[in-house]
Amino acid sequence: MMNFVWLLAVETAEAVEEGGGLFDLDATLPLMAVQFVLLAVLLNALFYKPLGKVLDERDGYVSSNQVDAAERLAKAEQIAQQYQQELAETRRQAQAVIAQAQEEAQQIASQTVAAAQQEAQAQREQVQRELDEQKSQAMATLEPQVEGLSRQILDKLLGSLAV
Amino acid sequence: MQMIHPLVLAKLEVGQHLYWQIGGLKLHGQVFLTSWFVIAVLLLVSFLATRNIQRVPSGLQNFMEYALEFIRDLAKNQIGEKEYRPWVPFVGTLFLFIFVSNWSGALVPWKLIHLPAGELAAPTNDINTTVALALLTSLAYFYAGFSKRGLGYFAKYIEPTPILLPINILEDFTKPLSLSFRLFGNILADELVVAVLVLLVPLFVPLPVMVLGLFTSAIQALIFATLAAAYIGEAIEGHGGEEHE
Image 1: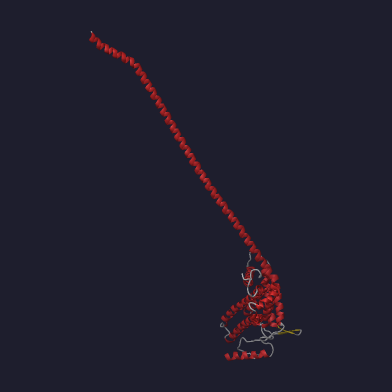
Image 2 (image 1 turned 30 degrees about the vertical axis):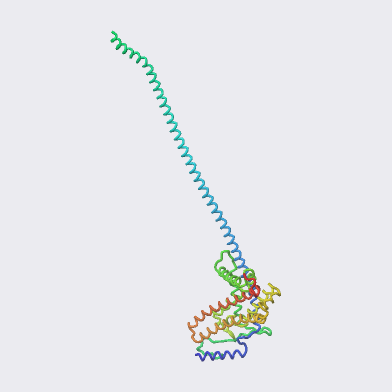
């Protein structure tokens, strides 16, 4: 079998000599070149240009969309941050209002208590004063009676002695 | 060659061509037939993909956009962000044409169509095609260099020192030579290996080599396009690479 192949190879080599052959350069070469250039021109019009345009347009579209989206994302983040800030601010204000209200209420309560205590004190003092006054008045009225009575007692004692 | 053993399912034909005569010119008919098929496939797919362009791609449009982005990345990496755009059609067509050619040679059962002489195979199987592509690449990078840097482009021949002048000039010849022979050799060798294996063991055994062939075909297309873009980028940028960013 191997011999057969070698034989064939020899025979083809002979065929080469009788015209044709592997390195048979002829008018095929320039015509093929022309044909190739034509193919390049046709493919340029039919393939590279339209599809290249589509690729470029798509690149532009995608990148512009991306920029747009990034912008919108930044804006959304900014709004969210602002919202958070406002929320915190509002919360703080609410806290402050509550604290103030509590303070005021505390103050009012303590004021009221103080006022009430003061009034009670005043009333008590007044009552005390009245009481003292009445006591001294009573003492004052009792004083002559005591005097009389003691004189009478003295008189009686001395009188009996004197008799 | 005419006396093929009846048991042999495949035969080896190397260097036989279907000649067409146009005027005094000889053409390799089988190369043109398959290259027309490749061109038709490329144009048809491009047409179908761009027929109804949507912002959100689907199906064929999506696939071709993937291909275009691949080509753009390739050109961008080799030529640079600023200059790559005008070269996308050239580099891209190189890649697509070679890739579809190679894969059509590996996947389409051309051998079922009998020609009077020669046989249908990948267009890149013929030295004319690969030399044509390589020479176009040379023209492209000369054009790129001159249009970008004017006559200052010649300065690259004496960079970094004038001693290297002969080597730099030689480079302009070795570049198309290596480009064309690399592609031609790889594709031809792949088809020959598959043909020989099919000759020896007609069933299943050649399959792994065929899969490997698909892989190398794709790699060759990528290499050709990448090198072409690299040459163009080098011509634009200058030999010393003073504009590297």
